[in-house]
Length: 227
Figure 1 (cartoon, rainbow, N blue to C red):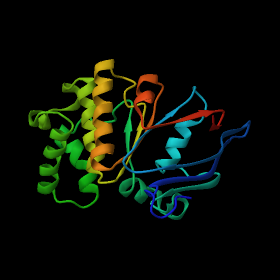
Figure 2: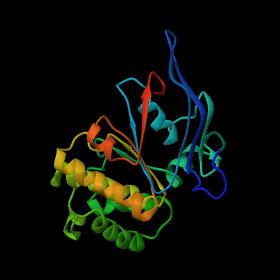
Figure 3: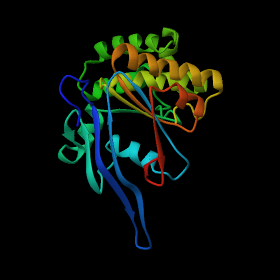
Figure 4: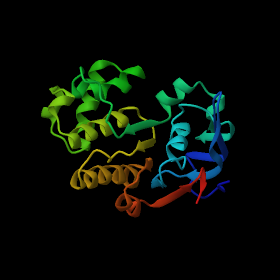
């Protein structure tokens, strides 16, 4: 446990185990993971395909609860809270394939999580413009649709949308997987600034060794365990 007087963890994993069970097989995807993630840092979770890193991220994202053990966010277990509410209020996820709504404008995409939380449209639109500037895009993109943007621009819109969720935990699943090296570095720079300057806890699943080396802490996994 983190002691008083030291930066408190925002995400805590306590002996987290997860089993995929089907009629034909039982797979132990996670075999007792314990780790603490603090605000103000960028974490890279790395390992070969099938090691359990994406499963671990999905549990932190509230897409499911552990078979055994606990995932705590700001001291609250995902097993003790409505998962839809948890996903809406406590974490934001950035995906490799952006997952922007194609029929909504950039502004509407960024406004979406704010309006889910009850923010009025006018205030959400103003905040969307601020967030688009924060990720290094001009206001002119607000009225465009995702298909009109490059991959790097779409991922920056996805980051802005995640910020609109007003959480302090950003989970990123291979956020640079579809980007060239220049855009990968740019997106990482944005995420690092959010951690170091604004106090976000940024947790990235990545295969990219270059990004892993730039993270504040690297969590390496092998066969469902910490390597």
